[in-house]
Image (cartoon, rainbow, N blue to C red; front, side, top):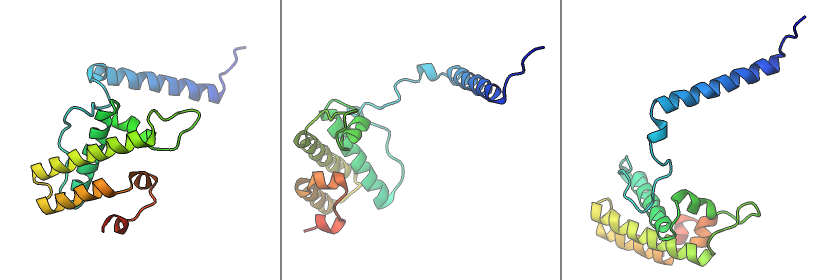
Length: 152
């Protein structure tokens, strides 16, 4: 008499076969040669799609984070993760002052680029540079600030 596999074993085997098939399909489509999955923040990215105020603000913030990550010689993703509280599992690589200087510098360059591209007019760029220079970055990171707190 042969033992019949349990339903849990059949499900596990089916999941394994599906995972192998998915990997095989992705490799067949060229996933192995698609390059790194995390972009180099020091190299220009494709233009962020969209228009209007929301897209402009997103472009400025993402470009600013790229600039900060580039100056810290890391990825934008690692920089963003390092903004959270330090834990035993993931100690922070930089102190708060170093992060603040890098973020201010990156955002300043990002505002300059946005003005150069014509995304924001000179008057708005000037005001944005003042916000970047004066805003309490550590409070912004923690999310404890309102837009009205940034406008003098």
